Length: 396
Image (cartoon, rainbow, N blue to C red; front, top):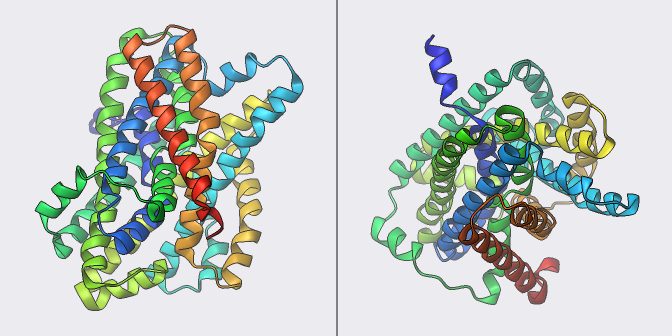
């Protein structure tokens, strides 16, 4: 009975929220915190607010329309070529998302157990077997993800307690909104890591399956989305705050995730370093579970027929394994791989958020002011991406 009561606390937003605590967030916020201090902390808060709004729209679309964003969009595209063109960025989202999660698991294994990184990358397929065990029942998957979120959160509570950054600086930087050209690349990376396109895709699928037509569930959906994404926002902010306190204040620029782990040991002891490694591994595993469910749903919508989750994971993971191993072998830093994967997701965001806002507006699912907020959110995303492209930092 206790387990049943616990499971009632977990819903679609539980699964979706873990996408906002994936290894890409580690890379983006650690790079930002170590290089620019807390100058981009406001981006985390802004992107988190945008994410809450857009996740609310996606989930409500599933409840009211009974279908997901992808299914509804595909059904409105009469041309086969248009459907193929729309499917390409969706598949790119799945692949780019998996790259960060794949690397996160490999890094976690490498840091905690001293396994060579290229060997750890091969072992990172363990999430396939974890998924097979966890996904027999949706409640079990939600429970596992909820527990992993707790592990991630506690790990960063430990780190913040040990590092003890100055609260007044955190508060000041949270409301200090500045963005010069040299910081646009990392700002876009934080945006792509925080407003996760695959999470926006998945939320509508989950609510349509669980609460199709049950308008009385909208309040619960709203409450869960706010609560779980607020937790994710605080964890993401803590990543940047911890990097600021541990590295920036000591003039240490982190150029690799392994360096970040090793630097923590002499500065703050093995507990802080192990908490970092555990959080990274838990983040990689939990977010992998989410992305594979998203991949399955998207491929089923595109193909018009079912496909098993483990096949989706193996195919996507094999696609990513070769370029990842090549990148590592030629000396590309792990933190750069994580950051670039999130920049790619930022550039892909408009392909998800524009159809979402258009659909909820045309179907009259939300109020005028909510639609207006959605349009403003889309404009903000597009502006940051335009600034990124104009800055030329994609080839930096």
